[in-house]
Image 1 (cartoon, rainbow, N blue to C red):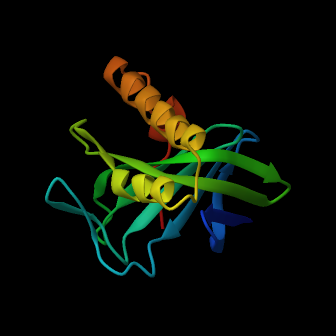
Image 2: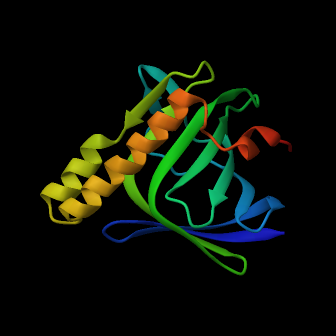
Length: 166
């Protein structure tokens, strides 16, 4: 089974894919995909963590303001968790729609977590693409995730129940 993912980014970027569903749990969709079309690899704290050809097992939480991607390199080694801060995650049938709010969090396998793309959020505010309320909301979601990480309450347990399989 495939899920139609519509991933929106302000002001007008839309990524659409049809990804293989690993599990449809109603309020959580687990699907897999490959990273493609990146202009440059993503480095976090000096470490390359995502590049074209890497794979992701992603968890879309309907009604939540985040998703979680388990990132695997080309040898299927777990690289960490990539968390998107979202305005929303909606589902209609086999279509998922998400609106990205720029901020992201990367969590290494050892638990070290980093907030990334703050510059993109700042630029969106400076150029009037988002308002102050949206800006503050994005940070509040990220702060809540960091607090839950510290308490061992994030990511949701379902994330550890699935691994990448070809």
